[in-house]
Length: 276
Image 1 (cartoon, rainbow, N blue to C red):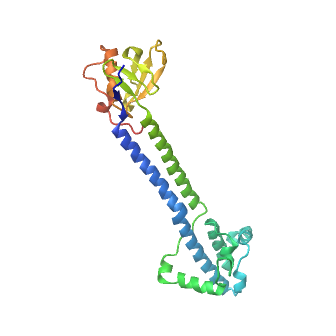
Image 2: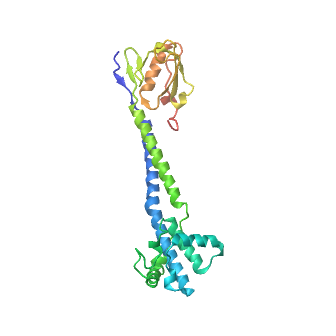
């Protein structure tokens, strides 16, 4: 047999899959940017603003500069939570907001709460002066960042998983379909399936078109076929071109009295399916 004709990806299907792939990967990349850059930066700026408010409240209450430094921020936050947030006021409430903001962005560590500390070389008085200059300026007051909730960054990572994960799965699906080839012998009218087996028109008991509007056809194989005897084979006509015309040609040969000459395939009589 000479299987001189080979299917190729159906252009409308490939374009649709490519568009879906771009949308999913774009969604994942956008989520990745928010999770690793945009949201952490916003959280760090809010923590800076919260630290300014804490130091201001501490100064108003006459708390010495040395007492504003926190050596164990994790333990201090737990103590404040144990007291009950609704019962906190003044510098304690401001301290709770500051430590909570640091916790959200993964900076609830002594190097970010000790003054002076490993990364903080300014003493508390100098730090307050610096933060007051930053957050009371016209640009700073206008750009005071909103607080992040505890789940904001986690939700962005969920978007990354959905976008990237879905994109990878769709890409693998596209690759799998591209690797699947049907071959056709136009002289003998035999169809070679991707597994290497061959179907002649006489091997097909029924061309079942119950999902013809979805570009799907079920081939009921005669019991005598060496590999697929008695089976029902599903062919997706939307993914592979020109598989549809080959199948219709085989149907006309197998059942010449049942197929009217003017019969058309699904690509001419129905809109493309929502997904395939």
